[in-house]
Image (cartoon, each protein chain N blue to C red):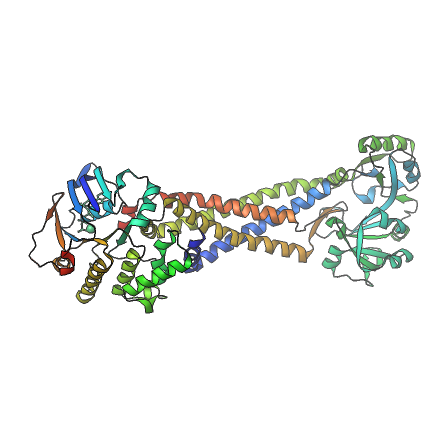
Length: 237
Length: 379
Ligand SMILES: Nc1ncnc2c1ncn2[C@@H]1O[C@H](COP(=O)(O)OP(=O)(O)OP(=O)(O)O)[C@@H](O)[C@H]1O
Ligand SMILES: [Mg+2]
């Protein structure tokens, strides 16, 4: 059973009297553990699709089932709880809370789960270790480099062990070297944790690390033919 | 909820200038509010005193300087059923009009002071007071204000007493007075007051009806040289303070205005922080923080500002009132400005209420914001 099922999803925005329809009867199935990249011209609706799957936005029509739950039917407050347990979101920028340390930022999602302090500490430390920032635990975002900030953001996205991690241009603001470090990290986490990743990117090289590549064209999803050999670890599925 | 406390505190600390200013504003508001409230409470205490004590005054006179009753009315009043005790009192005040520094001398038979009043001597002793004609005991608040101690000489106008002790009372207004010997005060004034007093204080027997006894007293003394007007002590004091009462009543609007300003101030600050953090709240919601929690977080932030400032204001007011010994009086009755538990509790309650009310609109606004547009707003 796919972990993400997007069925006939249409999303419309009203801009004054104009109606924009970035998604028109879009369909998508993603299996557990897949690493999927999503490309497409600017303004085609990539972020919109990501937000719908992350349940921070609602489709105009259609259903989205994630991990067996039809999230289009949940109330706003139920959705919040559902998100806490199922979704990790990596933003492009501006995603850390500036008044909190790296440690505290990563701990945030855990505060919403029934975990005691010791359990939280253990998980935060594992996440910090995974992004190789144990020595920066008590640094504030402004004391971190862009790449480190993004690693903290990634640690925060995986710390609660979510079903799906979505990332919206996670390397969009970073230089080449840092980008490739972040991409390596995402790939490694996908491999080691088995978490499903859906990543929006404009960078073909970034998209290439994914086991499966999609393009958003005229409101629909198109599979991109595989020119690059699939990484061995992802082939198992 | 408390799991997010560090986030809350750190946010406030991050904007410490803004926090400090808002807290100061709240402190000033609650300072004024508590101050005004203390005066109201002080007044209420005076005018709502238990009605088992009556005051017999000369009819149609208001200032103690103009009320002259024969001292021997005492004997006639004693005969009236329902009367347990009568104390003749000569009152001398330096100022009959409303004033912030009224000094009032109560001359009463020295041996009666102890039974007529529930005073506790903080220094000095009773026998010293009772055995010396020119001795006086001074209320604690007045002593603080005038820096008097036992053994000092204290002179106001023609009255010159030696302080034989400092007393405290459960009724804070009493602590603004000086008690001295009746005969001493009658003679010292240079007027021939021997044989007359300002008023008689009548203590009723248990169960006696104040109104009945009061009219009975006025009726009995109708045939005497001077007509009387008898009222319960509360009513008597209220009428002495009549001019002030309206003014003090008006001052409560000052208190309300302060609370209004404080609400606006807190709301403004909190709305500003909410607007600054639209995106941050959207990030929190993306992580799974519910709208309800966002609402409570913002409300808690506002409440914290309010309580922080409010409590500082309340305690500053209490300290000022305690150490200044301020009071206001007219016609030989003074209202003590004292911090009472009632004032502290009301202040605390009001602070919490203002914090919650001020936080509602910002909290509502923060929790209603749509996540996606908010995320796009800056990033
Ligand atoms: N809240 C909104 N109100 C109105 N229009 C919106 C809203 N959100 C998105 N849109 C429009 O929907 C379309 C898709 O937006 P979206 O952000 O999903 O594009 P994108 O593919 O992520 O673009 P980019 O690559 O530039 O990030 C755009 O035309 C955008 O203007
Ligand atoms: Mg986008």
